[in-house]
Length: 221
Image 1 (cartoon, helix red, strand yellow):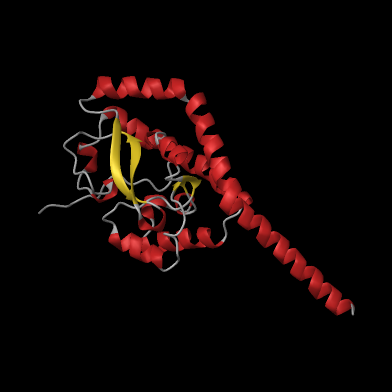
Image 2 (cartoon, one colour):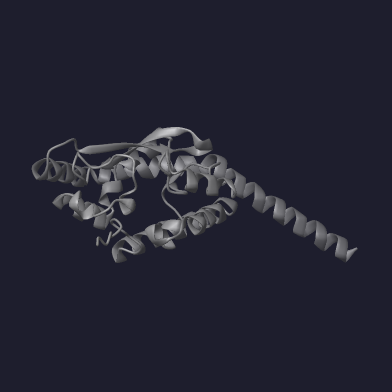
């Protein structure tokens, strides 16, 4: 009788925990994303204005940079960033894959990228519902190798994020299978506590500039 009671109690506890997780994923996570993104835009508006002026004074071209990325269920959306590179930069190639990427990055852009401030306009993507604060970083529309690898872990079935588990675990330095594995691990264990941990882990990684690569080096004969 006691054994049966213990089993029943554990089962109820598991169901209760599952219910709380589902509530967070399907309802609370989006509400938290919206509120934090809105607060972020309001609080950081003076910083936005300063960055906009700096970009305009530094180089020709628009302030914002738009690029097609992969959203939930492999839909396409346009991600927003502060422009950090010259307007003649190849458009649909990850920066770390460019030969001599530093030649394309502007002076202000180098600072924005080093501090990850170029990602701030993605708060607009979060408000629109294209992205979440925490989730797999959205792949480029033509990064088929990453998208296909994520399919193995159902990591394309959730909203992409401003930051994620892979970003605090190696970022650009991670091989694609490893990066997709981290994305899959996150998707299997989405919790409020986990998101908070990743959020603060991101702050630490940004301060240390962990895992940032600005282009491959080509050795010429």
